[in-house]
Image 1 (cartoon, one colour):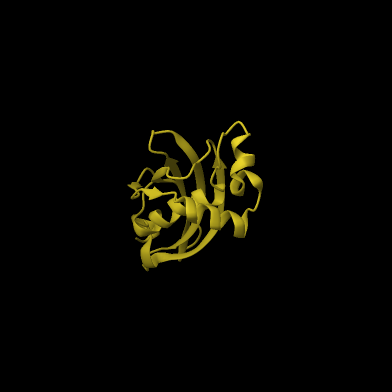
Image 2 (cartoon, rainbow, N blue to C red):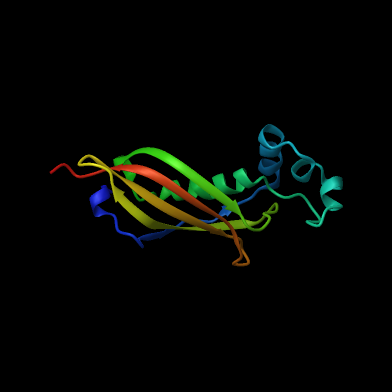
Length: 143
């Protein structure tokens, strides 16, 4: 979808993403190798009571589902930035559902504009576990 066709408030829902324990552990060992993510005995003694998923892995699980229903399609030129906030822990076997909303539009020039998309991810209990604000550069229609 071209920048000119987008509107603040447009929303899409994502398909659920299941946080599989094996994938969670493999991701943690490769990219976030701390005991809270990789050592069940250690994690069991924390206030979480068990292993928690790495935050980036939780986000990327929802992001992958968002890309399946992406607002922009072929009109996406590039990503510009992202800011993730983790609000609640995510555990193995949690099911995360996302809602992506266009929250700001700024036309940069005749060729493209900056689109801000806010993604909210909820667990199977309806609890908001993370938010992300991503900025993307999107093509304008040619005049």
